[in-house]
Length: 129
Image (cartoon, rainbow, N blue to C red):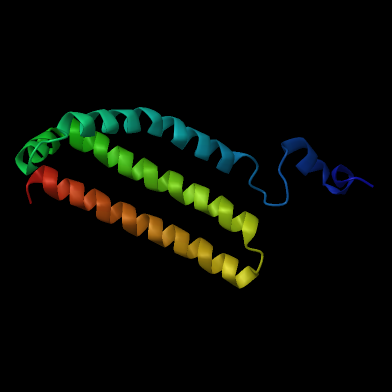
């Protein structure tokens, strides 16, 4: 008897496995990676152009609304992608129920907290607060 024989007819039609998640997580990870490519390239080019600059020049660069927006998008997308990647690692390598759940919760809360703190820092610099 194969694994396919043990699945319900609905699961065979929809392609959903035991997690009932299908490929949604996989797609989110790929889409976030694709979105990050131009943002990372922009950020690296910006940092290279700012090398040797002082704090005033960096502040002036961040005062540009487009630069601040792209930086916030980079941070948000980066932490979202990080959360998705760590979630896969936790689900694949931690099998104890309580420890796995605790790590998944910690991953979510830490990702949100770090993203929020980073974005707040950028907004404070950009808005001069």
